[in-house]
Length: 94
Ligand SMILES: [Zn+2]
Image (tube, rainbow, N blue to C red; front, top):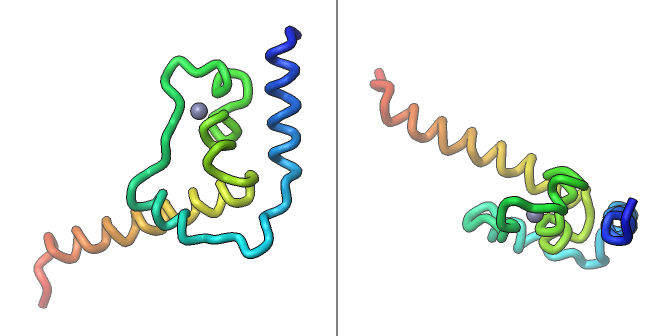
């Protein structure tokens, strides 16, 4: 394991132990849901080593894994709402 890998692993560990900051502002999650958040450019060493859920860009955008999970759950929900909205327009109402 070279130095960079060790440092990457240390940062992921530190990030995964982070508490959700007090008075955590969830409004920026809404912003990410609407506009997305900035991902690293491919190929991304961090993503290869740490996986999609702990990649550098995710760690930059979310204070800890729980917040990122919350974001993903909300994103799934909002995708369902969008799908239902589209379906309700396509399927004739009686
Ligand atoms: Zn990334």
